Length: 132
Image 1 (cartoon, helix red, strand yellow):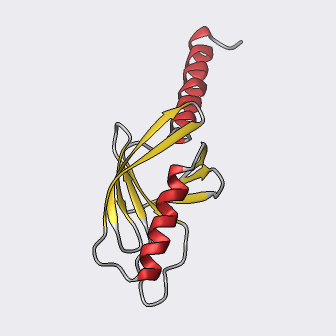
Image 2 (cartoon, one colour):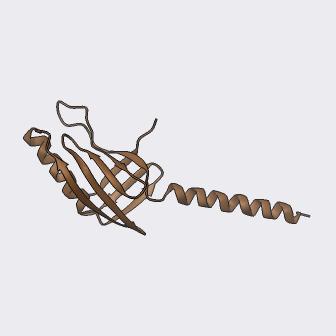
Image 3 (cartoon, one colour):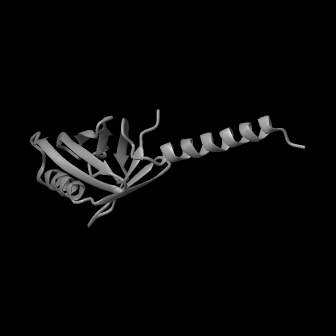
């Protein structure tokens, strides 16, 4: 016969595992992520975002950099770009940066699977958590 103590321990273990899985699939506040993209010709740089604990974002794009803010409610997400620094970028990189900021501003929903955050809007953007 199974003791009550074993049943309670098993229930606690199952609940703990489901909470850990849910947290892993939550919006990645406090995380630095890199866009899943190939570098532009003549560069090794790939855009990344650093998402703060309150949704504040530091952007490092193809050439430009700046700040922004994510607001999240359920699976809905809004990105509001802040001041973007020009940094005397070549025209092709400046255009790619402007397109990426516009794509971020147009996202509507998000999903996360493990270390991949997918931002969904007119253009789907995939970011991967930076490893150590």
